[in-house]
Image 1 (cartoon, rainbow, N blue to C red):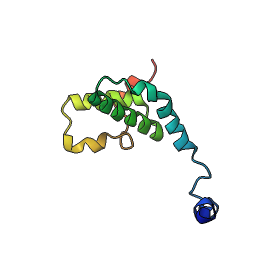
Image 2: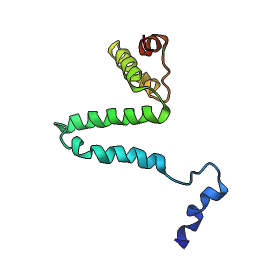
Image 3: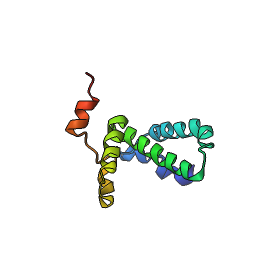
Length: 108
């Protein structure tokens, strides 16, 4: 413990550092709970696709992006032939709810 004292007490001198790691623990809990379900993805490629979607869902949660309107709009843009060189614009932290999606997402 003495060898790591500077790292253990860093939160006292730097207000940006959190006292705990609850956010990381919460995100890892979802992975641990779903681990048995992910064993039977069907194939290695299906498991890769599931991991990519799971990663996008967790990123949506991290940035407060509503997943259903996000995926609805992004998949529609991809189906219309979105430029592959601009895929980074569709990531959750850069996505903004468009007018059409906002109207479709609001309750009647």
